[in-house]
Image 1 (tube, rainbow, N blue to C red):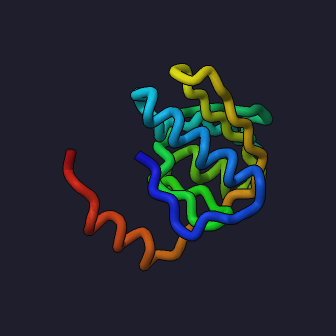
Image 2 (tube, helix red, strand yellow; image 1 turned 90 degrees about the vertical axis):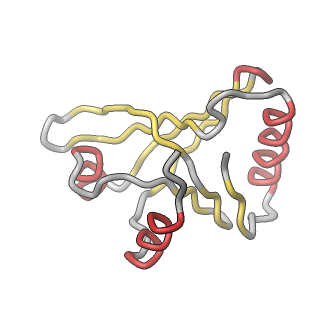
Length: 118
């Protein structure tokens, strides 16, 4: 599940929320899965992986990762990413191009203290 907080009232965000609700009603499996692509300066190539989108806060899409992972290092060296959401049950894909940044230490700590173990 994705938690929406103070979602932007701009049209793309409202459409995303509408499609999310349609996908929920259609019993979309792994609705929070997002394919995230970033650029590795060291390898001079693009790589992709799935992350779990946890929050959309206004215009910010928030997921969590190990800050020592290869992908986090890619984010540090090249801030531009591309993301793709595909909800097969409603046959829609959502493409996103964005700049990435870290959330605050307090935000991270609060999330990890409150999350469920399942």
